[in-house]
Length: 336
Image (cartoon, rainbow, N blue to C red):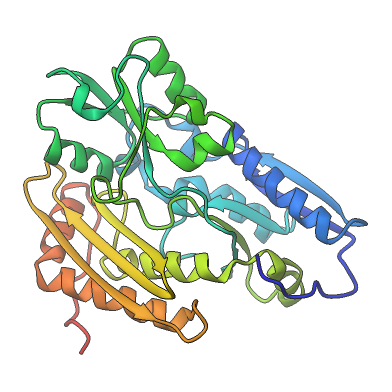
């Protein structure tokens, strides 16, 4: 976290808007605890809410409105003053926020990898032909179809406990989940294998938490600043720039992952068709003087997205988005 000294005077009351799933409430409690350590006299409360994304469980996100379904109700609570801040899993946050809102704070990242979860098998390679594997993500579906074409990949919606319940009652031979969520809920023992990023490149922002507030609330942003983790922020902003530049959404299997190695930020991006028959990859790196320069990270994301565009990424994006009824404008010329 940022070593910046908390501003004075401290806040009297802060209200956190959160989805009501067990994982979302853990995330909100995590932020609540951190804020209470910073401001012991502050009354930090959690406003639990049910979002449209939580209510619609019989269709994939790509068919019902995408990631924004998980944040709209929380943003409404921010807009009308019922809450001061909203805590999100960053991989669920749209690349473009509505006017009047900003991601003020990004917390230190948990494990960004995907996790293989199964009661009977130790790895994807052990699954017999025709085994049913569940995932809520087109990105993971494409990865599975590309590398394990003998498996039967099917949609899997619901919160973490719901997905695990469907696995345990035998609906699936295995499921793929984010490792971070399992670890945060003390369910690390359910992970049979963590998938290397070379096998399953994570989604932009996976494993990181973000705090959204209304724009212009400078005092609130200052109170939250000590929770901001600059190295994580630079990495996930580079990833989100790839997705933003390509119009990434739930309709497109798009992955982007950045990690720091010896003061150098390395970024990998990938766009594919859902069946995994066409896969485009690009990567790059950037050195920042202070180890976490935001503009250098954004520039890196732009370069990697431009390389993917040059390979034909926008053709895939437009084809998949058109099939789902989402209009994507023609691609701009790649930046110099």
